[in-house]
Length: 242
Image (cartoon, rainbow, N blue to C red):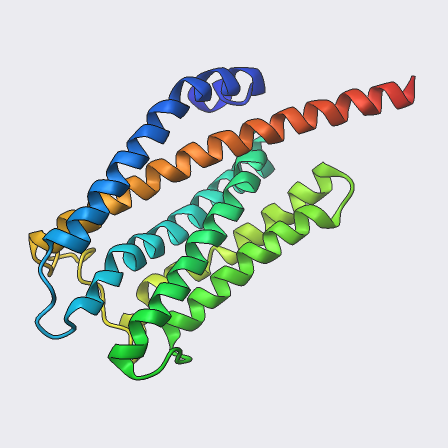
């Protein structure tokens, strides 16, 4: 809890995150380049899917990130609602466009992968439909922030949506287990260990780490801009009220 309160100070957050930013930016660039090289040039083609399976090295980490980011937004929203943490809401707001981008990448790459495998660009099965709902939740969250002139009201409304929408995350995760879908079941995050060869697992994890570092770097920049924008708004309001 003490660590949480340390980051509640916007000036302290800016100072500490600025020191972390170049490391995350550099790490993301290195990991993504290495992950793409391993995935597209080193990993063998799948014996059933051939070269088309290489879409997996973008599709799967993007899917992981879209759920991870939304879960983080829900936690940050709860923190903002319960403890009135001034930076938590801004971090959730800063995360939403990044999460929406990863979700769109998941849907687009999945469609490109599904066409040669399933013979169709889209099917209304549980996994794909729940991911589409996730994308609309991101869009709705961002729209709520823009729907109110008062940032506090906007943050509260958006936080409630983020918390309500969090129920969709476990639905996405377990949809392939609960319902009969065309989407293949989990092959990495399994109780009995990954059911995927190391030559494919290593690029997947490398890309996931690279995307995570990219997300951290982008959210740091966006949160710092949100803090500066809020300061400017406060100063303008003070001048108007004089």
